[in-house]
Length: 199
Image (cartoon, rainbow, N blue to C red):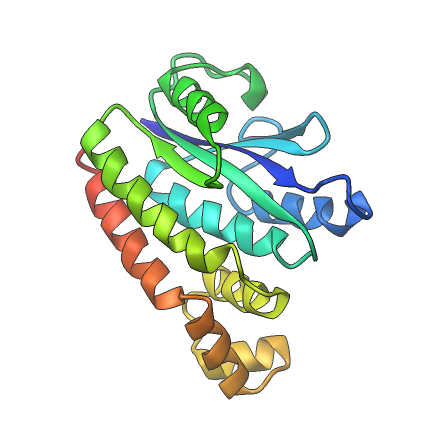
């Protein structure tokens, strides 16, 4: 079983593509190698395959990366399922994970993050949680996004360490994590990981 994240950049034509594409590539590189595990295509769309238990936090990580660029955001669909055919290019691989991800992405309307697996009951619970989380994450400032991204990349670091890393005060870090809903995101991700193993 694998997870496939299908996404695209909101307002990708505003400003310089270099503002976000290299940052996106750097983040995707933390989860695998291009083009087997991830690929950017059609200019502003991307796909990433990874272990199911890593998918939700990876999606939030990607959002924190893109939200550091003014006026930009990202829409993503997580598909959980099988990989029946593995190619050297992710965009040529196939299986229910890819189908679920694609169908979920096509169904995205007002929400910018959703999941589809073969367990409708779990999908319903997770999608409610994700919609609620978007009330916070959609309005992340550039500073909050930067702090959340650093915390996801360095979970072992405490607030003092993050303050040194980002050249900010510890109170700035504490406030950004609070405003960004980091603790609630961790709880949501713990629920997701626990339940995804039961699929």
